[in-house]
Length: 360
Image (cartoon, rainbow, N blue to C red):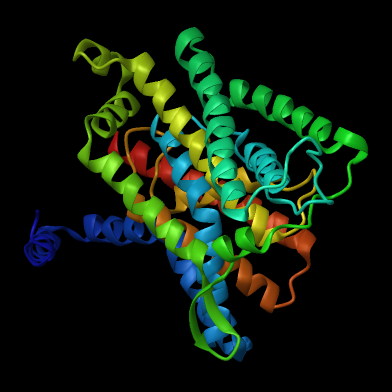
């Protein structure tokens, strides 16, 4: 591992040797490459000054809880971006798996799946976990198959599966006379397993159990990305698929596995959302993929491919959730928040592409 102190010393030594023009470009590039972080830091400081509640324990635990809820989907979609792709179906997969999970956790008398017998709450949790992994994995497998087999752009494939998945969602909500009504009436076992208090800090401030689950998933994904042959192959395919193929990497298998793993992560996000939201509707999961993509790009996962770190994704999710909480605390109109989200994605992608063009 490179010594950061020596790296700084080398940078300082190189800077001394630069002429005036190069020094100016050095600072300009540094500011532009980190412009998004600088702007966000200024915004966060402003929010902390404008609203004293922003830095209180309750607000901080709320941010951590939101990060944990949205982290799994970002971890999944990050792999698709490493392959120079994306996944527009992610949000709808979260919605479908959340609905399936809740349907298996409803108390007797409230179940949309009326054919289910009465069973203990922990059985519902196991059934829910298996169901969301299977459903999410199958949709991810389909995405990966069409991308890898027919060389279709992930945008087109996942746009198609997004629409198909939403069709299944609306059909699911119409089952057994439900007529599109929200799904609720969850067992205490499920709620305690997901949103129950893991750590009580002070007053009403606490961290739910799903924070721990998000940490476990992050560690698992870090291990997969950094310590397995599959992870190395993923980055090789993302950097240059043709070169990876010549080197003996099974590009088809790697692409399918990345999308399948992503689908599983979306399913686990849906499993958490089922209890976190408490009442699932057909709109659950809408635009979740936009937040996840923005978080990944902010965290340094490049659309150019072959670049990204789990730590960067975690940082990106943190930054994005802090901004959204700050916007709410500042009383920004929800419609304006959508505009700001769009601008963040546009600026982040533009800065990412600028770095790539400069390297070329």
